[in-house]
Image (cartoon, rainbow, N blue to C red; front, side, top):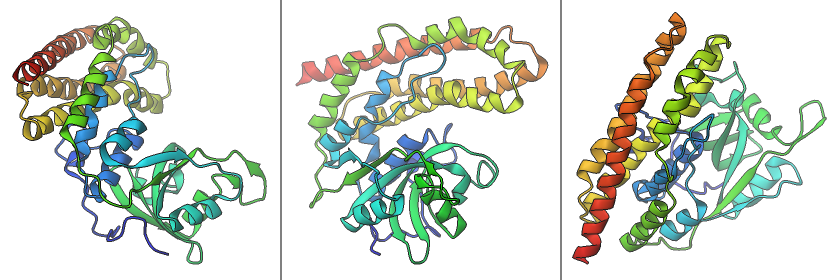
Length: 330
């Protein structure tokens, strides 16, 4: 069966630069990472999409799980995304949509994804999203985008993915997975910088009314102390939903500002420095929290968060200043 995006090979696939190993956060979250690789595979610049990271807030127990708005994906790249109603087997729906040239994005169990070897593959269960580019039911094989990779699976892993909805292998009914499909335009839509900037203004208008890192500072030491009596694996869940989501969010924002500096000639250089300071600071804090939990000493950890909150204030100030200069020049 033909691939939705042709010319890709799981054996020699090279991830986009936003997933380079030298970054603070080579992977962010499954949905944002999926869109980065899909857009890059289609020949688009995923950096143009990342202004939505301005809207991240602290939600009391976690930082916002940042996801690209599908309306922005359509406005910038011409890709339309819809929910796929799953009322037959997963396999039949995927075959139908892929056969129409549509990329299927489906929530699956990471237990069956070979690219997660050493993390959850055949050892643990986790909900994650893949983009299915090619499916061959006869060979029980499919290729897929996931996180920073483009991989292939077959055999029992294929059966496991297909049982994510409809029927389990022993015939019992289970809940269908949440699934979307992406309609690709008939011709490539050139990226309009004016549209990117329009979305940036929308995100600026929707950013948190108070500094989310100051809110986090107020809860931080109590949250770390709570980790003392939790199972060891819980630390990784906590870190992913707080430290990593915040740090990765602002690394993506810094990349977006760099891209605008090149493509729109807006001087965001100083703002990007503050975005990266939050990113690297959160990465360092993750190690500090791990040590604090091991020693059962949470004291003093709020001070680094306070310093990152200062970077957040400066980041927003610098973005506002650059946008004012842009408006005045126009």
